Length: 101
Image 1 (cartoon, rainbow, N blue to C red):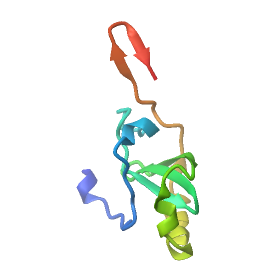
Image 2 (image 1 turned 60 degrees about the horizontal axis):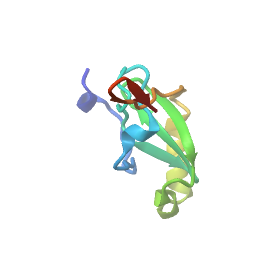
Image 3 (image 1 turned 135 degrees about the vertical axis):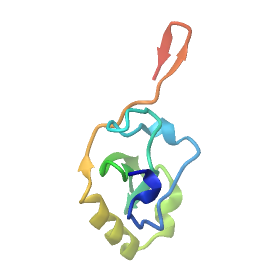
Image 4 (image 1 turned 90 degrees about the horizontal axis):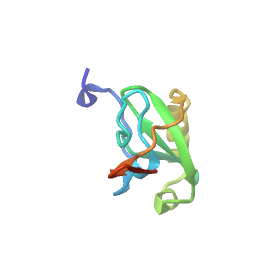
């Protein structure tokens, strides 16, 4: 099953330009692989829909939560509670022999 075949309706899924900065799905095995984030009030959770996992990255980092209401947060919470909490893979870049995290 490919990502486009998933039956997940999340109209308010958000993406930032630097998605890989906030880690990736440990099941996918790629540091920068995620499906964006959902807000629950002002806390942001990145997700992988294929593997049904989530990881919190912080609160009030992005302003998108300010444009949502309790109905959106309730829907996001209902979906997030069906996902397993995981530790994300960290994004890594190499420069010669150095590894920067």
